[in-house]
Length: 224
Image (tube, rainbow, N blue to C red):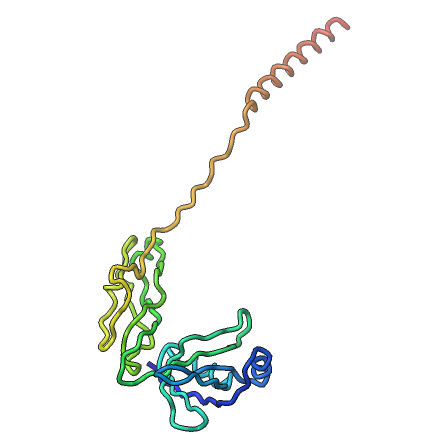
């Protein structure tokens, strides 16, 4: 798990308007809580935070929060409020943790390889994109890799099939579906619809045409 350090400053003003003004200066309002201490309202640099979170698994792993330049406090990010359509972070919750006590968190599942069933048109269908685990903060994996290369069509893997990682306990139901290979979708083309009466109408028209021809011939004969 990547471990990153982020600087934070206390003393930020509270309230919606104050938070908006803070964001306008390139800072992100945040709160630090946990381990029996009073919540601390802090501000972190948006660019520093965004770059730190690009480290693999940083958003779910251990982050050393350096508050007002003193010794870093080990934390986990419990919540990130992102702007709905802009690449902006609006608020962060940091949870203080102990390096000697296990914590519960979520880690991303990475599916590795191409399913054997893909040769028959099978489609890899993940049921879970992340799983809940319990581990020491220093043993939280950046992600859990799952090999899906041997899966045939209609095959699947369950939580119980996840790889064993030292110090990590999976908290999901062992029988919960993790991923499967669905059969290809077969599109059935609709048959062309027949319009009732078309054949009969054509027959009637043919008969009418023949009748007209006979009448015209008879009329011509009379004229001659």
